[in-house]
Length: 246
Image (cartoon, rainbow, N blue to C red; front, side, top):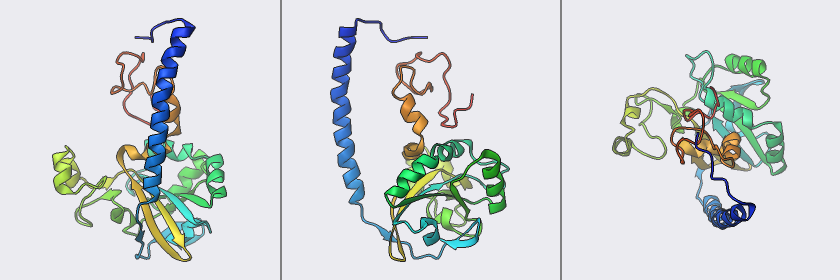
């Protein structure tokens, strides 16, 4: 295993201060990017999507729980599966009660939506001790319309804002024939009873919910995955797997 170089405290401090300048640049760049994200236009949600939750059938507006904003996880759980996606499970588990309380104090709700029927969602949540709001879209085109269920027979295939030609060109042509679930995050805001879609993220964009990864990025061994530099740093190289399975 290749460990970091051993140096004096003064040498470490000089290297750390140099890295701090780059971190500050990244922080300022992130602030600018976040401002531009807030400047994105929004799209009115016209469809009357219906979901099933603990109180029965509800609409998208109900998922806000009276708040102005909604952060929604497109949680991969195909109706044919017995258990949900383990990576999506890790992401949802990271969005614990404390995080949801912080969001609520800023007038923002969190909910997850999956295509599996609600009784199966409820059983998994009870078994794992999950308390976040989790709804089934089993009888809705919601997942297809927001490009987290791919099925060309239902809707044109698009993922991470790439259409068919772009997916092929970028090496993701397999998605055109794939029928199934993909991860995603959507953000919504409401104005009275009118709901607007303001943001969506797919692919590595969903790392916004992977708090464990963000902490690992601060360490010498990092995420301990094959793609990371420097090579040979971790005793065991794991696959890119935010579920942190061995």
